[in-house]
Structures are given as structure tokens and as C-alpha cells.
Length: 204
Image (cartoon, rainbow, N blue to C red):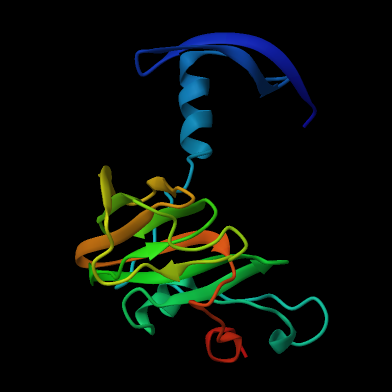
């Protein structure tokens, strides 16, 4: 059946639809036809994974062997890691994405550059301090421990839920607090706390 693009308008479930749409040449743009088309092309709901409920997924091999590909599941990696262990799951040159299991209160961290955190499961509070003096020099990359009781001015906090992102500003001190176990992704630069364990987390 040939298809053309027409400008069509119709009321559907109380909403005025008025946009470019693709309809068969033989079809007439009426409310019943819109209803039939909408029901036929229902969008599948996205199912979000969690620490306790996820599907690992798989690789469809076009050429080569599965072991030649770096494939892992961030929830599985977090489940097999200690709280706040920074497991590298993605790398581009010196830049990394780390999967962390958020559980309880983390140590204090700092970095000489901006970092970003995204909560993938659960709820995490991020507390920020502005140190009286820089704790590490600008030439040191990656996340570093900031000590058990770092001194600084309180900058506030952010409460993150699934899908929320926050910046971890350069030079600041921060820690995480999760009442129930969850999962976070951190975008940063590979540093002394970054843990690479490709052999154990990637599909074989």
C-alpha cells in the first residue's frame, strides 16, 4: 500500500491532534481510524532495571567471539561489589563510567575536576562541603578520598531518585547516603579508586 504524508486534525481522547502524519492513501482521517491506528501502534512500556530485578541481556554476535566484546550489566556489577566500590563499566581514553552500589553512608570524596552522578535505582542523598583549602592538586585526576572528617563550609545537599543527575563540582567534598541499597553511575576520570575487573564482569 502506498503512503503519503498529509496534514490531519482530529480529536482523540479529548486531545486535539494537529500535525503532519502518515496515513494510507485509501484511508480517511476520522476519529475511529485514529483510534484503530493508535491501538495498533501502542508503544511498549519501558521496564527499568533495579538492584533486585534486572535482566542481564546478551550479545548477538555478527563476527568474532563474545569474549572480544566488553559487555556487562550495571546492576549485576553493583550487586557483586562492596558499597561505594567504583567499578569501571565504560571507558573512553581516560574518561570512565563507574557503577556503584549505594548503601549506607559513603566515605568523603573529592576530585580536582567536575564529576557527575546519576541514580539508577533507589534514593541517594549527596552532601557537599567547600574545603577551607584544596585537598588535592589540579594535576591529580579521578576520585580521591577526602579523609574521615574533612573541614569545610556546608554547601547544601541534593536528594536524588531514579533518573536524577547531580554535578559533583571540582574541588568540592561530597559523600553519599542511601537508606536502602541502590545503584549509581558516576562519570569521571580514571583515578586511584577506579576498579577495573573486566574479566569478571564481562560476558564470556
